[in-house]
View 1 (cartoon, rainbow, N blue to C red):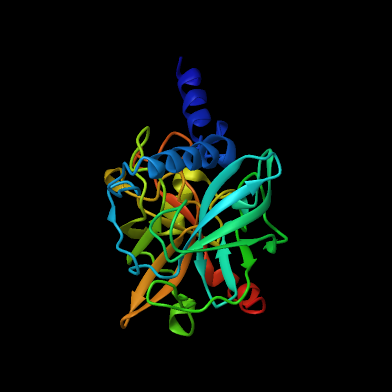
View 2 (cartoon, rainbow, N blue to C red; view 1 turned 60 degrees about the vertical axis):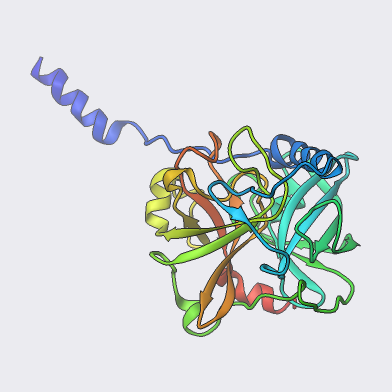
Length: 286
């Protein structure tokens, strides 16, 4: 009996690998395509009050002038959706999975600037000029980042670029700080609203995030925010920005990448691509 007890304790400690949370995999099929359809129908019916990110609040036109809505024209002929951030008059950054995910490939983007709606208003630009990171891993979403090139677009009160971190900000890990996520994702699991939304979130350490998703998913170039109280970027906010304000200037520190497979309101962290890890990659493409 004693031997059996000792054997059981040993197995509990070293015998079985820990089970981690799964991240949402088939973005376009499970999320982007149905969300794009829902938003289009809601906008056509003018039936919306603007609340998307879980626990967030509606964003006013011009409040996030760097935000870009992305309508993704897929090779399959279907239409999906994502978000992005304007970095210059001709360049945007988004998630690589917006262009390529399991079972789906993008054919072109319609970039929507200066609008809190996705299917109407603002400046709308079509482009096929997309470059995903060479080390993007479609399975664990490591290096989930891509650059979009558009024709020169002038800045206005509702269209402008966001700054990239530099100096001290480029060396920060941001854990323990607050940052703002922006996007068109649904308000909660199973429910949707349809205007641009924003929410302030706590950035957490990669160690804390890896305890949920594992070190295969959460690597040095990942940045995570707390999912406490079920708040955070929900499915449909992929590619959108995570902003950090310093001395009155907003800096892009994250690109929305993944949430837990079992839902946005599970109280689990959300994962972003850490922009400072890709500073050189981004800057040579601006």
